[in-house]
Image (cartoon, rainbow, N blue to C red; front, side, top):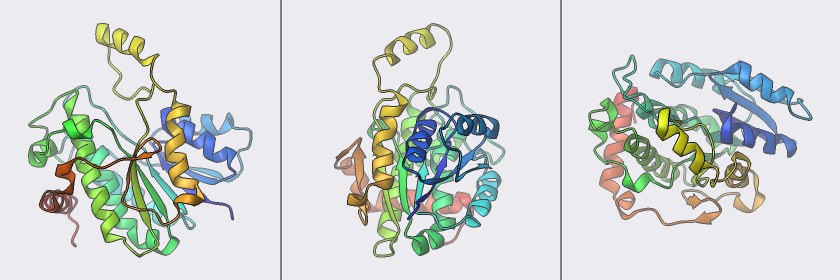
Length: 273
Protein backbone atom coordinates (compact mmCIF):
# COMPACT_ATOMS: atom_id res chain seq x y z
CA UNK A 1 0.00 0.00 0.00
CA UNK A 2 1.27 3.47 -0.90
CA UNK A 3 1.59 5.56 2.24
CA UNK A 4 0.28 9.14 2.17
CA UNK A 5 2.34 11.38 4.45
CA UNK A 6 1.98 15.11 5.09
CA UNK A 7 5.00 17.23 6.04
CA UNK A 8 4.73 20.79 7.34
CA UNK A 9 7.59 23.18 6.64
CA UNK A 10 8.79 20.78 3.95
CA UNK A 11 10.59 23.11 1.55
CA UNK A 12 13.97 23.47 3.26
CA UNK A 13 16.32 22.02 5.88
CA UNK A 14 15.19 18.80 7.54
CA UNK A 15 11.76 19.14 5.92
CA UNK A 16 13.30 19.03 2.44
CA UNK A 17 15.53 16.11 3.44
CA UNK A 18 12.50 14.19 4.77
CA UNK A 19 10.69 14.90 1.51
CA UNK A 20 13.55 13.44 -0.50
CA UNK A 21 13.84 10.39 1.76
CA UNK A 22 10.11 9.60 1.78
CA UNK A 23 9.81 10.18 -1.97
CA UNK A 24 12.58 7.58 -2.41
CA UNK A 25 10.38 5.17 -0.43
CA UNK A 26 7.59 5.77 -2.99
CA UNK A 27 5.34 7.52 -0.48
CA UNK A 28 2.58 9.81 -1.67
CA UNK A 29 3.41 13.20 -0.17
CA UNK A 30 1.59 16.40 0.66
CA UNK A 31 3.89 19.32 1.44
CA UNK A 32 2.35 22.12 3.47
CA UNK A 33 4.55 25.20 3.14
CA UNK A 34 4.46 28.95 3.41
CA UNK A 35 6.83 29.22 0.41
CA UNK A 36 5.19 27.16 -2.32
CA UNK A 37 7.71 28.24 -4.97
CA UNK A 38 10.55 26.73 -2.95
CA UNK A 39 8.53 23.54 -2.49
CA UNK A 40 7.86 23.30 -6.23
CA UNK A 41 11.59 23.77 -6.90
CA UNK A 42 12.32 20.95 -4.46
CA UNK A 43 9.88 18.67 -6.27
CA UNK A 44 11.51 19.45 -9.62
CA UNK A 45 14.84 18.26 -8.19
CA UNK A 46 13.46 14.83 -7.31
CA UNK A 47 13.95 11.82 -9.62
CA UNK A 48 10.18 11.25 -9.61
CA UNK A 49 7.55 13.91 -9.11
CA UNK A 50 4.59 11.55 -9.07
CA UNK A 51 2.24 11.58 -6.11
CA UNK A 52 3.49 14.85 -4.56
CA UNK A 53 1.22 17.83 -3.99
CA UNK A 54 1.95 21.24 -2.48
CA UNK A 55 -0.45 23.18 -0.28
CA UNK A 56 0.05 26.71 0.97
CA UNK A 57 -0.22 27.17 4.71
CA UNK A 58 0.89 29.87 7.12
CA UNK A 59 0.97 29.07 10.83
CA UNK A 60 1.76 32.62 11.91
CA UNK A 61 -1.80 33.38 13.07
CA UNK A 62 -4.65 31.37 14.54
CA UNK A 63 -6.77 32.17 11.49
CA UNK A 64 -3.99 30.92 9.21
CA UNK A 65 -3.63 27.69 11.18
CA UNK A 66 -7.38 27.09 11.10
CA UNK A 67 -7.53 27.77 7.34
CA UNK A 68 -4.67 25.32 6.68
CA UNK A 69 -6.36 22.70 8.85
CA UNK A 70 -9.57 23.01 6.84
CA UNK A 71 -7.61 22.31 3.66
CA UNK A 72 -5.86 19.32 5.25
CA UNK A 73 -9.19 17.90 6.41
CA UNK A 74 -10.19 17.40 2.76
CA UNK A 75 -7.10 15.34 1.85
CA UNK A 76 -7.15 11.60 1.11
CA UNK A 77 -6.46 9.27 4.08
CA UNK A 78 -3.25 10.12 5.91
CA UNK A 79 -1.00 7.33 7.12
CA UNK A 80 1.64 9.75 8.41
CA UNK A 81 1.87 13.37 9.56
CA UNK A 82 5.18 15.09 10.30
CA UNK A 83 4.96 18.30 12.36
CA UNK A 84 8.16 19.95 11.19
CA UNK A 85 7.40 23.67 10.76
CA UNK A 86 9.20 25.71 13.43
CA UNK A 87 10.60 29.13 14.25
CA UNK A 88 13.65 30.03 16.31
CA UNK A 89 13.12 33.78 16.78
CA UNK A 90 15.99 36.22 17.03
CA UNK A 91 13.79 39.06 18.22
CA UNK A 92 10.45 39.34 19.96
CA UNK A 93 7.56 39.38 17.49
CA UNK A 94 3.92 39.71 18.54
CA UNK A 95 1.44 38.44 15.95
CA UNK A 96 -2.02 39.91 15.15
CA UNK A 97 -3.55 37.67 17.85
CA UNK A 98 -1.40 39.42 20.47
CA UNK A 99 0.73 36.30 20.95
CA UNK A 100 4.48 35.73 20.62
CA UNK A 101 5.19 34.38 17.13
CA UNK A 102 7.29 31.32 18.03
CA UNK A 103 4.74 30.33 20.67
CA UNK A 104 2.08 30.25 17.95
CA UNK A 105 4.12 28.42 15.30
CA UNK A 106 5.93 25.94 17.54
CA UNK A 107 3.19 25.20 20.06
CA UNK A 108 -0.32 26.34 19.17
CA UNK A 109 -0.12 25.33 15.50
CA UNK A 110 0.53 21.61 16.10
CA UNK A 111 -1.91 21.66 19.03
CA UNK A 112 -4.74 23.10 16.93
CA UNK A 113 -3.98 20.84 13.97
CA UNK A 114 -4.00 17.74 16.17
CA UNK A 115 -7.22 18.80 17.87
CA UNK A 116 -9.11 19.68 14.70
CA UNK A 117 -7.88 16.64 12.76
CA UNK A 118 -7.93 14.05 15.53
CA UNK A 119 -11.17 12.55 14.22
CA UNK A 120 -9.62 11.78 10.86
CA UNK A 121 -6.30 10.77 12.46
CA UNK A 122 -8.22 8.14 14.43
CA UNK A 123 -10.19 7.06 11.37
CA UNK A 124 -7.05 6.82 9.19
CA UNK A 125 -4.81 5.32 11.88
CA UNK A 126 -2.38 8.17 11.28
CA UNK A 127 1.13 7.95 12.67
CA UNK A 128 1.88 11.51 13.88
CA UNK A 129 5.47 12.56 14.54
CA UNK A 130 6.26 15.79 16.36
CA UNK A 131 9.69 17.28 15.78
CA UNK A 132 11.01 18.62 19.07
CA UNK A 133 14.29 19.77 20.61
CA UNK A 134 16.61 18.09 23.06
CA UNK A 135 17.08 21.39 24.86
CA UNK A 136 13.42 21.56 25.97
CA UNK A 137 14.36 20.98 29.69
CA UNK A 138 16.02 24.41 29.86
CA UNK A 139 12.84 26.12 28.67
CA UNK A 140 10.74 28.35 30.90
CA UNK A 141 7.63 26.61 32.29
CA UNK A 142 5.83 29.95 32.85
CA UNK A 143 3.48 29.38 29.92
CA UNK A 144 1.48 32.58 30.52
CA UNK A 145 4.56 34.74 30.11
CA UNK A 146 5.79 32.71 27.13
CA UNK A 147 2.48 33.16 25.32
CA UNK A 148 2.85 36.94 25.15
CA UNK A 149 6.64 37.12 25.11
CA UNK A 150 7.09 38.64 28.56
CA UNK A 151 10.00 36.23 29.18
CA UNK A 152 11.38 36.47 25.66
CA UNK A 153 14.94 35.36 25.06
CA UNK A 154 16.49 34.80 21.63
CA UNK A 155 17.86 31.50 22.91
CA UNK A 156 15.40 30.35 25.55
CA UNK A 157 12.08 31.08 23.84
CA UNK A 158 12.65 28.31 21.31
CA UNK A 159 13.27 25.83 24.14
CA UNK A 160 10.22 27.11 26.06
CA UNK A 161 7.85 26.75 23.12
CA UNK A 162 9.17 23.25 22.39
CA UNK A 163 8.70 22.35 26.07
CA UNK A 164 5.03 23.39 25.98
CA UNK A 165 4.47 21.63 22.67
CA UNK A 166 5.99 18.44 24.07
CA UNK A 167 3.60 18.59 27.04
CA UNK A 168 0.54 18.66 24.76
CA UNK A 169 2.05 16.00 22.49
CA UNK A 170 2.13 13.58 25.42
CA UNK A 171 -1.41 14.59 26.36
CA UNK A 172 -2.58 13.76 22.84
CA UNK A 173 -0.91 10.33 23.16
CA UNK A 174 -3.02 9.65 26.25
CA UNK A 175 -6.15 11.03 24.58
CA UNK A 176 -5.67 8.78 21.51
CA UNK A 177 -4.92 5.53 23.35
CA UNK A 178 -6.59 2.60 21.63
CA UNK A 179 -7.90 4.73 18.77
CA UNK A 180 -5.50 3.61 16.04
CA UNK A 181 -3.84 7.03 15.85
CA UNK A 182 -0.38 7.35 17.40
CA UNK A 183 1.89 10.28 18.22
CA UNK A 184 5.56 10.37 19.20
CA UNK A 185 8.10 13.17 19.59
CA UNK A 186 11.65 13.12 18.24
CA UNK A 187 14.73 15.24 18.71
CA UNK A 188 16.48 14.76 15.34
CA UNK A 189 19.90 15.72 16.67
CA UNK A 190 21.75 19.02 16.37
CA UNK A 191 21.35 19.69 12.68
CA UNK A 192 22.97 22.14 10.28
CA UNK A 193 19.96 24.15 9.03
CA UNK A 194 18.93 27.81 8.80
CA UNK A 195 16.85 27.51 11.98
CA UNK A 196 18.14 30.06 14.47
CA UNK A 197 20.35 31.77 11.89
CA UNK A 198 22.10 34.88 13.18
CA UNK A 199 23.75 37.89 11.58
CA UNK A 200 27.05 39.63 12.32
CA UNK A 201 29.90 38.07 14.27
CA UNK A 202 27.57 35.67 16.10
CA UNK A 203 26.35 34.43 12.73
CA UNK A 204 29.88 33.86 11.48
CA UNK A 205 30.80 31.91 14.62
CA UNK A 206 27.59 29.89 14.49
CA UNK A 207 28.16 28.94 10.85
CA UNK A 208 31.65 27.76 11.74
CA UNK A 209 30.33 25.61 14.60
CA UNK A 210 27.56 24.22 12.39
CA UNK A 211 30.15 22.45 10.26
CA UNK A 212 30.43 19.95 13.11
CA UNK A 213 26.68 19.30 13.25
CA UNK A 214 24.58 16.69 11.47
CA UNK A 215 23.53 17.30 7.88
CA UNK A 216 19.81 17.75 7.15
CA UNK A 217 19.85 14.28 5.58
CA UNK A 218 21.18 12.79 8.82
CA UNK A 219 18.64 14.81 10.82
CA UNK A 220 15.81 13.44 8.67
CA UNK A 221 16.68 9.80 9.34
CA UNK A 222 15.02 9.43 12.76
CA UNK A 223 11.69 11.17 11.96
CA UNK A 224 11.41 9.22 8.70
CA UNK A 225 12.01 6.01 10.66
CA UNK A 226 9.33 6.90 13.23
CA UNK A 227 6.87 7.76 10.48
CA UNK A 228 7.40 4.79 8.20
CA UNK A 229 9.05 1.79 9.85
CA UNK A 230 6.63 -1.14 10.38
CA UNK A 231 8.34 -2.02 13.66
CA UNK A 232 6.85 1.11 15.26
CA UNK A 233 3.26 0.42 14.27
CA UNK A 234 1.08 1.09 17.34
CA UNK A 235 3.89 2.70 19.37
CA UNK A 236 2.74 5.99 20.92
CA UNK A 237 3.57 8.51 23.62
CA UNK A 238 7.35 8.09 23.34
CA UNK A 239 10.17 10.62 23.16
CA UNK A 240 13.16 9.75 20.99
CA UNK A 241 16.60 11.32 20.96
CA UNK A 242 17.23 10.41 17.36
CA UNK A 243 16.69 6.62 17.38
CA UNK A 244 16.97 6.12 21.13
CA UNK A 245 13.81 6.13 23.25
CA UNK A 246 14.51 8.48 26.16
CA UNK A 247 12.77 9.22 29.45
CA UNK A 248 11.24 12.68 29.64
CA UNK A 249 12.33 15.21 32.27
CA UNK A 250 10.53 14.66 35.64
CA UNK A 251 8.42 17.84 35.37
CA UNK A 252 6.94 16.49 32.13
CA UNK A 253 5.41 13.66 34.21
CA UNK A 254 3.50 16.24 36.28
CA UNK A 255 -0.15 15.75 35.30
CA UNK A 256 -1.20 19.12 36.76
CA UNK A 257 1.42 20.99 34.71
CA UNK A 258 0.42 19.24 31.51
CA UNK A 259 -3.27 19.84 32.22
CA UNK A 260 -2.63 23.56 32.77
CA UNK A 261 -0.70 23.83 29.48
CA UNK A 262 -3.55 22.02 27.71
CA UNK A 263 -6.19 24.31 29.18
CA UNK A 264 -4.25 27.41 28.18
CA UNK A 265 -3.95 26.12 24.61
CA UNK A 266 -7.70 25.43 24.51
CA UNK A 267 -8.45 28.91 25.78
CA UNK A 268 -6.11 30.69 23.36
CA UNK A 269 -7.34 28.71 20.34
CA UNK A 270 -10.96 29.13 21.49
CA UNK A 271 -11.54 25.40 21.42
CA UNK A 272 -13.66 23.36 23.84
CA UNK A 273 -12.95 19.94 25.38
